[in-house]
Length: 158
Image (cartoon, rainbow, N blue to C red):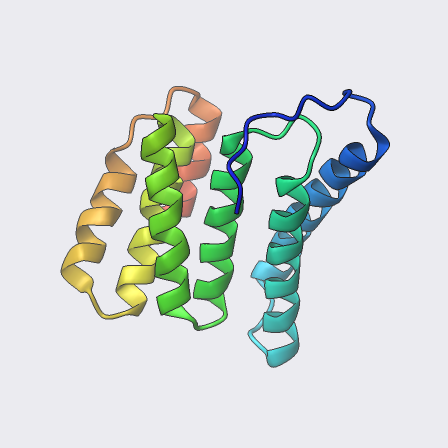
């Protein structure tokens, strides 16, 4: 996947604008399925939506490397939810690598640690998972609303 800087296409380029809209829609629609009971149909739909989101964000107007990092996060999350911990860890490590490369902190860094902890836990690597989980919980979050979201998501262990 590309981590290109924003394109130099006009901001009103209709194709890149459509990719942006579809990327947002696909990403947001994943959350509609996260709480549903696992089933082969739900799992397939989660994977399709996560890959669709990543595809569209890669081509979207005004994309940044942070959009790529968040696409990798979602791919890790969905692979974890669909019982594919090796793939989940692959994308979690890719998320963390890009996060560190970009110097991203705060909310996104906490979630990079979170998704990595969940993947490690699913693989039975509990000591590493505990370290990643502690790092997620210890990540400073500047915005109180964002902190509340992170606290809720990290209320239970990986």
